[in-house]
Length: 294
Image 1 (cartoon, one colour):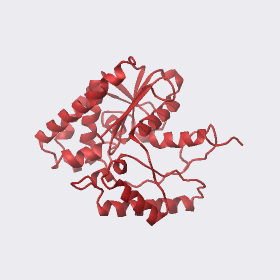
Image 2 (image 1 turned 60 degrees about the vertical axis):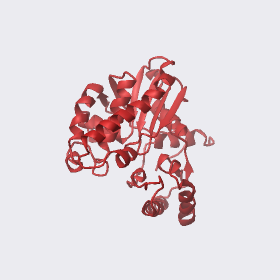
Image 3 (image 1 turned 120 degrees about the horizontal axis):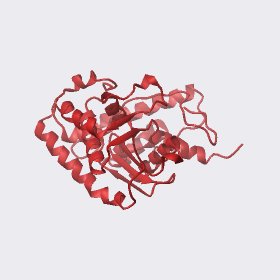
Image 4 (image 1 turned 180 degrees about the horizontal axis):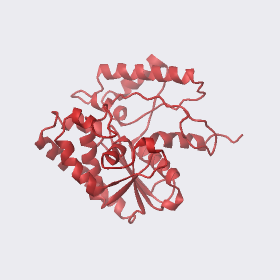
């Protein structure tokens, strides 16, 4: 919940979160299970009740890759609208990348120069590059940490051969788009957004959340490469004991680390800065930009 007026910072006056992990609730046909649909509707009803209790005047309901790419995505949207009265706007993968880039640009400012932004979500990986607020190139790949964990990393800890196979697949998919970015030149700064990058930076030694929103945090490729094999050998329970790793995201941290490692390696990145703003803030910023002046 933010105080919305043109030029405002989208810093939350209040925040309500619930972990759905829809990307992990897909059946063999790629459809969201009945349990996932009911959980989604219940979560939206709860969120709308919280919004009402807090006096929220306007709500921005949006959905990302888990629903966008589900085999029964249209049915899910229809069910949610019938059950809750809320019509979710489904963002395209490119929209996700562009809005996340906008958030990173506003956070870092023009002095950051040419930005390369990577965001690892539950269902997809977004990559965007540019000098302005709208990136020159933006892509979305089906390499989200939740999706890959559910589909490619059985076992706890996962089978080493499955880890190697996923590593090869992730690198092949990212490698196919690197040339789309390289022709624009070397970025002045590389930025990572999302919980996955924040948690990887934290276990690699970055400052705690309690140290404040404006504390600079970064993740080096060298540290990440040290942590990937360690994470691969850990159970979910063992990962929850690492600093900054929540119980809800511990299982998918390895898949996220494999994607992060591949991204930094293939784009030739030694150090990545952590940006606290991501897609949510990008959606809010875009809306604030279009509010009428009072």
